Length: 212
Image 1: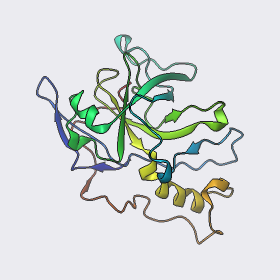
Image 2 (image 1 turned 30 degrees about the horizontal axis):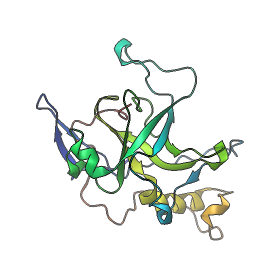
Image 3 (image 1 turned 135 degrees about the vertical axis):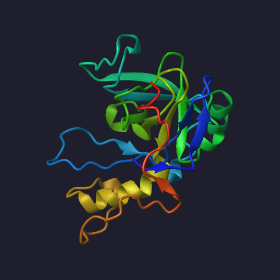
Image 4 (image 1 turned 90 degrees about the horizontal axis):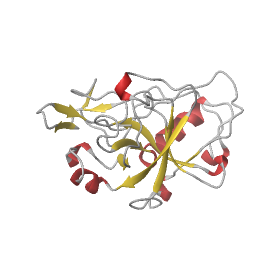
C-alpha cells in the first residue's frame, strides 16, 4: 500500500491523532490459474454507478468479536454496508475531509463493517450471481471497527494502474482488460500514480485494518 503524508491528520475524542491512507492497492500474482470466477472491476466510465445509501457488501476473514480479542473466523464472512458520499462521511464521522480524497470512498451501517484482517478484501455491488458482482472498493482503513465509517480504496481511481500491472504480469489476463500483446515485462515502479505527491513510508498513528 502507499501512504500519502498529506492525509494527516484526524483527532479523536481523546485528542489522539490518526492518519488516512490513499491509493491502497496491491497486486499479487498466483503461481497457477485460479478455478474461481473472476470479479469484474468497476471502470472509470462507470464511476456514476454508486448513489448515496446504495447497498454494498464487504467480504473477508477479519475479526468478528473485538470484545474477546482477535478472533479469526473459520469461514468467509460477508456484511452489508451502505455507500456514503465523502462529504457526508466527513460530516457524520470524526474524519476530516482532507483524509477522504476522491481516491477513497466510505461505507457504513449500524454494527456492520470490515475489521482487522479484512484489509485488502473486496467491497462489492452484488449482482444476480457471483459472476455478475462488481468490485467498487478495497478494504483500506478506519477508526475502530463499526465505530466510524469504513474507508475503502476506490477501484475506479486505481483501475488503469491495476489493468497495466495485470496485462504485464498475467499469462491469461481477463479479456475485459483488452491487453496489448506481451511486452518486455512488468513495470518496475508499481506505485506509478500520476496524481500522487509527497509519499511517506507510513502514516502517523494509522489504525490497523478497516473499520469493521
